[in-house]
Amino acid sequence: MGRSRALAGDPSVARAVGPARPVATRLRRRLPRYMTGYLFVAPVVLYLIATAIYPIMTVIAMGTQDVTAGRWHFVGAAHYALVAHDPVFWNAVWNTSIFTAASVVLQLSLGLVFALLLHEAWFNRAVRNTMRGALILPWVFSTAAAALMWSLLYDPYGLFNYLAVGVLHWAHPIEFLGNPRLALGSIIAVNTWKSYPFYMIALLGALQTIPAELYDSAKVDGAGPWQRFRAITLPQLRGVLVALSTVDLITTFGHVDLVNMLTQGGPGRATETVAFYVYRTALLDGDLAKGAATSTILLVLLTLVTQAYLRVLARRGQQSW
Amino acid sequence: MVVAPTALRRRARVIAHQTWLVGVTLLSAALILVPVAWMVSASIRPIREVLTYPPVLFPKAVTFDYFARILGNPMYQHFFVNSVALSFGTLVLSLTFGSFAAYGFSRFRLPGGQVMLMGILSLLMLPRVTLIVPYFRLAHVVGLYDTLPGLIVANTAFLLPVATWLVKGYLDSIPHELDEAAMVDGCTRLQTLHKVVAPLAVPGLIGVAAFVFIAAWNEYLLAVVLTETSRSQTLTVGLASFFGQYVRDWNGIMALSTLASLPLVVIFVFLQRWVVQGIGSGAIR
Image (cartoon, rainbow over all chains, first blue to last red; front, side):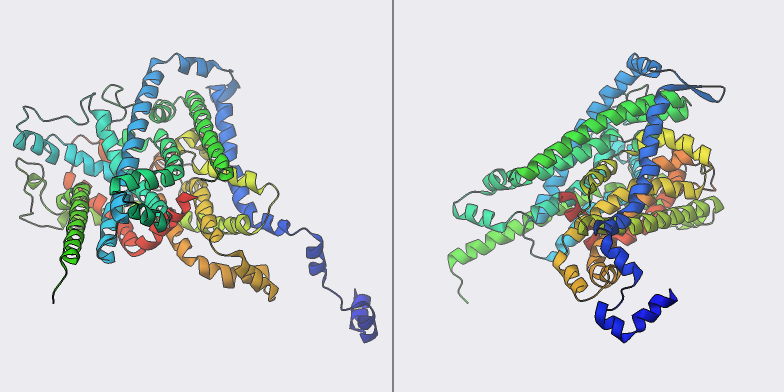
């Protein structure tokens, strides 16, 4: 070391071989540039492997095991057979389909209508932004707060029933959450109220990327508002709508909160969804293994949807739309 | 001043259109906000004015006793402190790690980077319910059950992919040439990040931070699965516990849910522009 430093300090040597480079720089030169990149992404990748990938593998393993006297042992597909023959599970699948289809359609339509209103040319920006804020507000509240607000409205003596009985002269108060035919619809209403703003903001962002020239030339050609919407807006939004409905589908599919708070799956099993079935089996009934098997089924279904979506995204990248 | 009839007609049409636009939007917003207005009104006046035929639309007697009762209750104070700690803990973890990763994905051509990004995108869409079973078991095994750090770790697992994805989207919109120029001028990579990229990314980061904070503050499922005492329970669990009661103290409930929502409404009112921008541009990609 001392010798090399003496050499580096020697002007004749410096003149002959150039200035000595610190070891660190030399090392960095030899390593490919992307190693630095790996250092940036490593914390996230490792964190997600530990807290997401490993639990995913655990849940798959747990679904094939059973626990007796505190010990886990392998039982193969026993839980899956049990779940497949459980009419309660198929009832949950049916409820989930209705819940998801209705929520996605309602949230995206409502989001699109409001996004279109806000995208119009407003006479005053501040007024428009205030309106935007008011329309986003439901998204800011927690699901718990939303559920409480709506259960006050749904109460037999609440505002809705005052309108039904007091104003419209209905014979009996409507049991929004107690009637098996209405309960799921009442939950869908709360879920739509709580979640549409997210899609509204996303669609508003997408609308702003549509070139104004398209509308100008359509106007010159004499196209009315409805024709412009059909011929320009909808086709331009197609990709975003596909993406958002997939995201919405998956989110709604895995939704537990509102069902757990408002009805606990009841009355009877009228509002029990697959996600709530997982929660109830594993944590309320305490059957972790069966819950894990159902989680795995859910996981496989969602992975299929996600992969189909990513496939569509990738194909979209190649095409020019 | 004489205005040509066509100009006048056009002006009338513009006014009619604007009136229609404002009217429809105002009406929709009013309907949308009915539940919120009803909650706030039930928190400041006796419940017999709210749950009655006909309901009293405008308060006769306004009282802040219900707020005082909630604020003075040590259990709710505990919930509040826990919610604050959880949200800030999750925010710091997700945003720091997430931003570094976003920078890595945005500025380096990484072998395997595409696969990692697709993995993050898949995890971003993973619903919490699929992992509550292993989390419940693993939390017991590693001793994080019913602790605040355990809740922060679990929440970060779900918000890290979102933060990474949104920040990456924002960084991609900042031209590469800027940081390349800085590096040609002799900045090291960390100096470039600190002095060139970070300042430009601030609006995006504020939006993502608000998004993560709101999501963590409102999180319910993980909290209800991974906690059981007020030592680590959050406001959302406290709110949801009202559903188990037979006789509901609506005044207290609505006061608590108003108070629990207030911080977010304040954050949102101030940061609306950035939140909208963050989601609007991030979700399109």
